[in-house]
Image 1 (tube, helix red, strand yellow):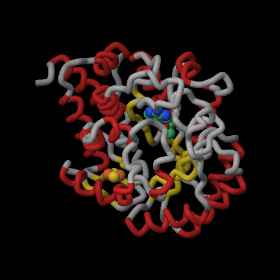
Image 2 (cartoon, helix red, strand yellow):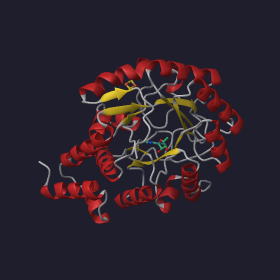
Image 3 (cartoon, helix red, strand yellow):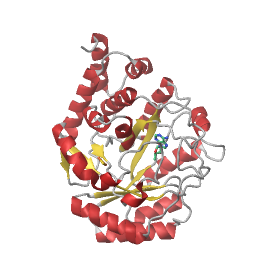
Image 4 (cartoon, helix red, strand yellow):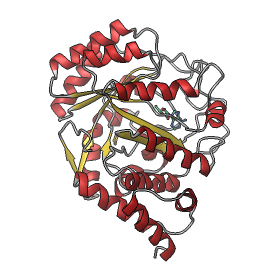
Length: 348
Ligand code: 5AD
Ligand code: FES
């Protein structure tokens, strides 16, 4: 049984799409049963998106990265990663496979890899756009100049994922070396919005040094930015990073935050992330039940998947995972949802 007090907070949150900081803190940190929070979030999602779960075909096209984020296995300082870049041909063939399977959104995700200049990336986006004009193209390639974002948008990119990671400046500086800037990351997000991208922000739950009040700051920042997509998953440690010894984030807290986000941002596209599926075998299904409505199965060639090792034990990297869609379809249906073949644009 959910505590009456928790139930009252959840109703108020649903009605006003907001709560005072202290009440949000209570919801995020409670040890009580939070089934009412998750049920209400599921209902709000149903009002806007029904039972539909949107698919994004994820193509991890380069694991080179010039940054050195302390939490990420692809950081430049990790010399144990076998680096790879997919050719245009490989990428287009991932799209072809995905299209046949019913995907209508392709997500090109990679580290910040200087090889992919504006010329190269724009040519790639144009080629995909020309071949699949009815599909959405999402980029997730980190911080670039406003001019670069403009050119990519003109080339046919519709959406951009750039997690803000943390809204708190001090916390940001604990997660990143001094050559990375909290201010620039936020600037990038506002620039992307101005250019007409559907924008995704987001964060890791339980990253080292994160406090619950940091999470409230994240919510307040996102209220200001008003992103179309919000990606959250638990922090998971990677053994070849400076944060190797820090514990993983909590699945239950991630699920609580997911539901709070659904109630505060009813229209948002919220993925049940791979990190959630990694921390628990039923994580993604629980994510959907807590208000998520997007899945991002891996479309990358199986031979490179194990090298895109952001954190340890990432799922869908083995030979058995050649067909993530088939694996997910049954699970999703039995959880009461419907996989749809659709661009899945935001419904504001
Ligand atoms: N655990 C969980 N998520 C991570 N990311 C990076 N490293 C980790 C990790 N160790 C997330 C970041 C990044 C996204 C692509 O992956 O939030 O924006
Ligand atoms: Fe990739 Fe199940 S979703 S193997």
